[in-house]
Length: 149
Image 1 (cartoon, helix red, strand yellow):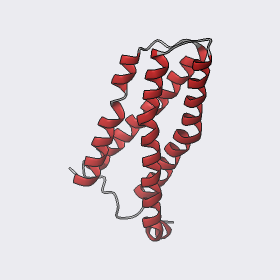
Image 2 (cartoon, rainbow, N blue to C red; image 1 turned 90 degrees about the vertical axis):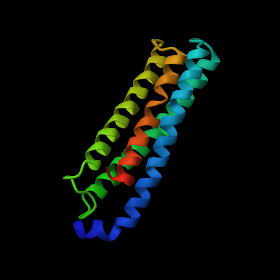
Image 3 (tube, rainbow, N blue to C red; image 1 turned 60 degrees about the vertical axis):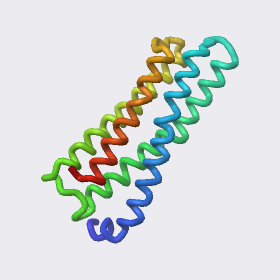
Image 4 (cartoon, rainbow, N blue to C red; image 1 turned 45 degrees about the horizontal axis):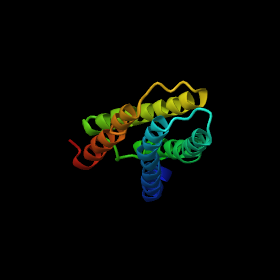
């Protein structure tokens, strides 16, 4: 298996990068949808249903598959011989940040369900603040991998 991973490394790395880009696009855009949804909340109207449809499609069709692909290809990279040295700090900071990104992804999914159930309790301002979470985590991940501190 490790021979296959070593031979397929450039392809796996390429697919991992494409998956990450797709996932990050969703993680950046989804909170903005929630900001607009919270600030224009009309629980029985057409606008509410439009936001719910947009949120559902983004989450289920783009974000979930991109997150799963990111994890699969990322784990393939981790198990490729010679790629990760777990005695260094950077793989641990990246793993922690990716875990945080995954938690945030699921947090967004729960907020989507809050709107569906009519039980949203966050304001547009709170969603704006949460919109910064993926940016901070992305910076930590990129610096960890590139600088290898």
